[in-house]
Image (cartoon, helix red, strand yellow):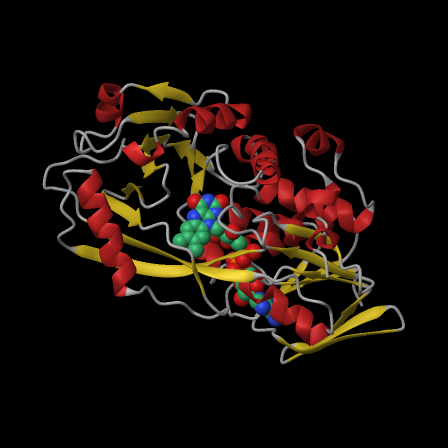
Length: 373
Ligand SMILES: Cc1cc2nc3c(=O)[nH]c(=O)nc-3n(C[C@H](O)[C@H](O)[C@H](O)COP(=O)(O)OP(=O)(O)OC[C@H]3O[C@@H](n4cnc5c(N)ncnc54)[C@H](O)[C@@H]3O)c2cc1C
């Protein structure tokens, strides 16, 4: 028997395991052959402090120091690289621009308004006249998601943690103060089980007889296409609009684009819908002088949210020893280090680490109780 059993080896489970392994013995069960097969392996790899609820922003700010300067041996190359975010206001969003800028500057102080000429210098393919104002976040970064995920898993193992793959529980039940998971890779037991099952977190709760949190997996589509011949896209920022109707960014010499879709789906292996790809292409062609001619790769995966779009981290009120770590939505990579620390602290001491509390991370804003019954 271990002290903690984690279900799910994506970014949430791996980062929580990394920090929990400082407190006791931990076994991490992953249903797939490889941890990171699901959402963690499909992200757009952007770190921005101007995105999401106040709690998400605080967790992102709290993750930055770890990603900028990870512990020795965590990774053999930098985890962050320069990118920047250019956010454009179409005429329909001119009125909310000032409010969005002021709100963003609370957590991304270098966010600033830029002229449309400066915007065109940053991203030379913008269509003249399509936007009325622009803001630029120079401190937004690209993340090496694979290196971050592998760093957490490697550190977890170095601290004595054990990863078991192809281990999907057939049953999960509690007796005599201990949770027991029966899997095809053997049976495992611990007094505390951490539900880091990504899109499947509510299914895991149902299997355990725990009240679900109303998690909704939402499909997000992405694809890459070739820029015009001879165009060097490497230094373009991630470019998006305030209406959240598209974004695009450089990706290994090509352009990665998304319609920023959020289509509710059951948890599954998702396929991109042609309509979403065509929608994104049309929006990008309207916003820029780019032509989306040849799509080189397309994919879709799930971003899972509860109603307030803030993660659920804490013990279930209706099931002793059942710890929620779910609802990371579209921010699970950029919040990973702080989220892992918070999860480990709440599962052991019951309190948010003081430095993260100072940034505004509150136990009650993460607790499953906030969602009601
Ligand atoms: C297209 C796209 C773009 C994104 N862009 C960004 C971005 O730019 N920046 C950012 O920070 N985030 C981004 N995200 C969000 C980010 O990818 C997720 O928030 C994050 O990966 C969630 O991690 P997770 O560990 O909760 O989920 P997952 O990575 O899905 O991991 C959950 C794991 O649990 C396993 N599992 C499920 N059920 C069981 C079970 N019963 N037993 C054992 N294991 C189980 C699954 O196999 C899976 O490996 C994006 C997501 C998408 C889809």
